[in-house]
Length: 279
Image (cartoon, rainbow, N blue to C red; front, side, top):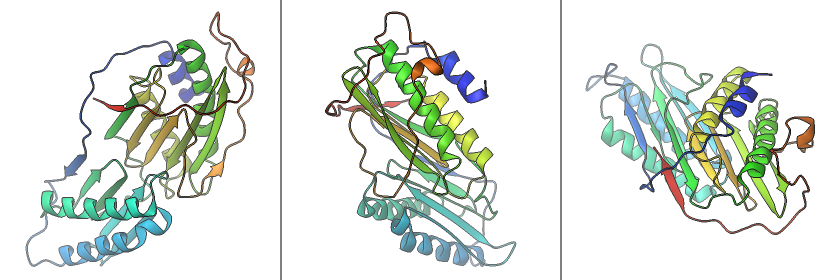
């Protein structure tokens, strides 16, 4: 049993309660690494950020770098696969504008927004996973059959997490049937990550999800390097995923909780409820 499976099994029966909160963003400016006015780094940084804005919405992901060491500026941005190209473009423009206002003299900074994330640095970080900062949104609707719901969700998320590290796009989606409902899910990593980086990032955000959303009929867990989302309705993805193989029957992986009905069938998806923010 690998560490990802162990994490799920340890957390599977935990139930937490949360207060409904307002949506928020996360911005971090590394005040230990600053540039001075008139230096070449801000020129390279502006060119890097302009390139990200120009290219991000094409594929939902972009990297850029300008300059020579030690004044090279590296930048990376990634939009959520389910947002439109227009929403992606708007988010990246907003991210750049807010970072320029909040981090006016820092050589390294990042921002995590609902629809996208963006980071820049004077060091090449493109292959380094970062899930230290996370935003979690949970649907306020609780599953009516929590034991069965958790078991089906567990199988689906494990299958997607195993598939995405083999996908060149680092984006996969799939669905799983339970009783009279269907769970639709996707996972996404930054395409420049190595297999281990993608896997470790997903393990971290899945653990975060299980601290509050594993009994809710919908969740989005967002970080700089990877995302996870599941809903009770089909997810419309703007950027093309790699379909994940269907998960094996639950009985071949984990026994269903006592009293659960293992019969599954397809049905029309349920509507989405409001979200609350994990703290």
